Image (cartoon, rainbow, N blue to C red):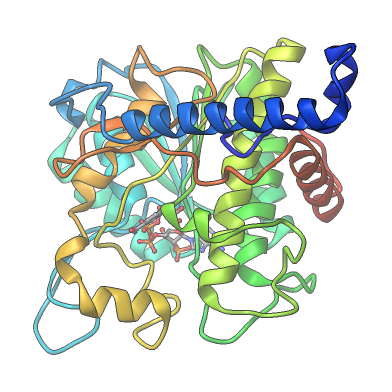
Length: 369
Ligand SMILES: NC(=O)c1ccc[n+]([C@@H]2O[C@H](COP(=O)([O-])OP(=O)(O)OC[C@H]3O[C@@H](n4cnc5c(N)ncnc54)[C@H](OP(=O)(O)O)[C@@H]3O)[C@@H](O)[C@H]2O)c1
């Protein structure tokens, strides 16, 4: 993936031999500008060109025999009526739609999140639609590393491999800053730390997977994060800031892990996706109406699309035979056709990437490898 902010740096001056510094700077400025304009043009083209026009969940090839873990996934559809928050319409979880599509294609699916009642309902609904579906719920609280370990240990005894891991679950924060039992800000703990820990625990199962893929859910909101210093929003908390940082972190992490995978021969394809803007429970169950997210939903409900559309980019990354390793997919036009997304974490230099990995490794006491 290209990084439009990665401009030439002065140490390259050495390779310009007899050029004086002023001329070097003028030349590199022109070259850098050309590179930026070029990469912007490329990004713009990518941001509107579908890699799979007309592709839908029905086109996913058979997933029979594939072992799939989806965090979240228990958000069965609900009809919201007039006069409440969120605005009226049908809402469902994106992970639920992942599970529904992949189980419908024959995969052995485990959905994992906190609420068992919602989990049983989601499983029942998917089984009603696909009576042959092999799907079950298991309990996982990503904000609690003991729960992540317990889930992973149990899974090691139940399956011999994982072929697809979709790191989908998330919170978009609560109106006030909250911390988990270990004192970590809750959005950061759930979205970033929890998924780092889970991926680390599942590495032995993923390594035994067949063409294994891990998909990290990012978001257009990630572009609101411009640095990776205040990871736990200690200086200035809003739900949007905390969410943006966590989602940028997952995109940066996906890229970093894909590089580590190819350099170290793990054979695991690490990808990222975002769903555009969809009607889910993320805002109602998190920051609520009196937040940047809530106000946006109330002002522009028409921009929030059905989850069946938003889920396509993730499904493409997880199950399309032509999906590219390390890629970031998202909807690229009004029809929500899948394409290569613009880079929502373009600020992440190699140094930021490596510090992010170290911060997650420290928070979890784990490494991924
Ligand atoms: N909706 C959008 O417009 C949008 C846009 C960009 C990106 N995304 C991303 O899409 C993904 C799916 O979100 P969604 O929009 O479908 O939201 P959602 O309907 O609220 O689903 C979130 C899921 O995460 C689970 N979850 C929350 N906290 C958890 C925890 N501590 N441990 C385990 N599971 C937990 C929830 O289940 P429990 O409550 O049972 O735990 C739920 O199943 C997220 O990664 C989100 O960032 C969504």
